[in-house]
Length: 119
Image (cartoon, rainbow, N blue to C red; front, side, top):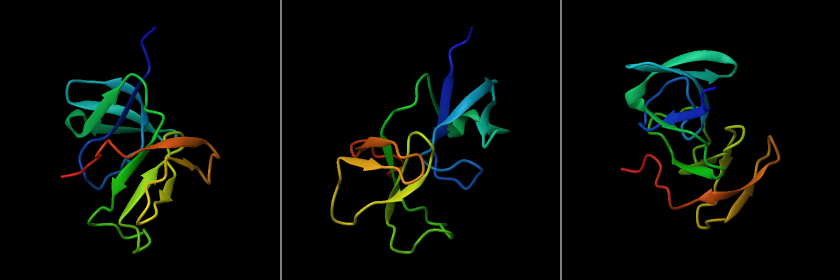
């Protein structure tokens, strides 16, 4: 049996994937990987993805996308839940160690050291 893999965007582009969210990889080809996005298959070019054998169990801190339209204007950054991909506001002047997800109720550490999509 093949090991389960997970993928997320490693490039700041507008597509069906939520920035910072991990998705189950159902197939990998030479040019595309197929991800389970909302119980539907989504083909994504592999060069756009980071693929790992186990998803991290920490909140990902994401800088506000330049093209964000459905996001509160005061969010300069936000966190993405490692379990359900829900977004959460981050305080402007604090760096909390943990956050509890308002959707799945999971409590996870915040990965402030990662630098996801920075630069």
